[in-house]
Image (cartoon, rainbow, N blue to C red; front, side):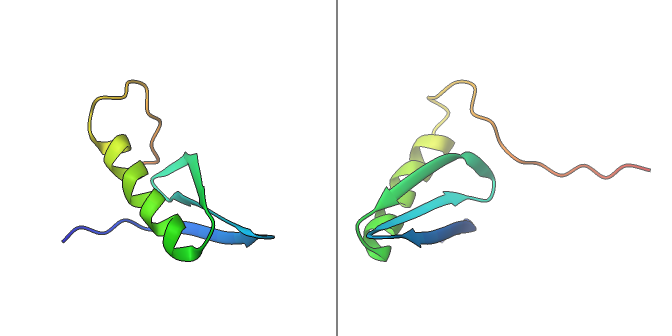
Length: 63
């Protein structure tokens, strides 16, 4: 089973979150579980290869 790190927080009644590797793509949910479900759907979309121009965080060793 794969895993992906994400950042999440509660803003009033809404839960918000995004993947560490894809910080430009935010999603929300009515509960923590709803947010997790929406994050799973978002991850599938972001990694499917069907969407062009997705920006992603990477790390480069220099020097």
